[in-house]
Image (cartoon, rainbow, N blue to C red; front, side, top):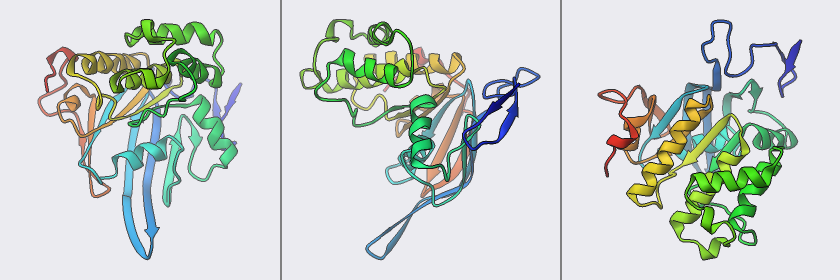
Length: 261
């Protein structure tokens, strides 16, 4: 039996994302010499410059860098929300770079889940309906039950029937995280997931995100908060669109309970 990837190449059965003959996780996210260049009113802005990196299933990776370093651009390219100017992006065995709009839409539904910095909740849907929509769109059975469970995970079971405008910024962020968890997709992308949260809630959210890597997802978190990088398996630092460091946290990985900010 073979498994067909989105770029119509085939892989032997049992060699898909997250598996290998030896049991070691295979690459889930692969970027090779990826660049993103914007041209605006005669100006050329290089957001990413020849970035090469790999993230495996089961890894919790934090991308650090100041504003303008290319962090969100990197996340958008992996998530299929933006198109690379050069290089190759392969996620879960799919060739993302060069894919058609239809293929990218299918990819986003079944491969990646996004926690946006600006929440992007549907204003006319309740918290429960926002989360249920994501579970349903990714093809999961019992979407309503999954949505209730995920809202409970982020501490919002009692806010399920509230609309986004009735929720605080922190609560909206937690709904956005519940929505991402509800899809069950193998790649989880988070852009400043604790930015609108108090410390206690932020720690709870980070525990949830770390647990997703334990469940064999590839988790990529973008943040400017260096403290969060302490709990990562790997830390990738960007500066002016280039990777300047890629390795374990300085001093070794810490537990979420050891964080403070």
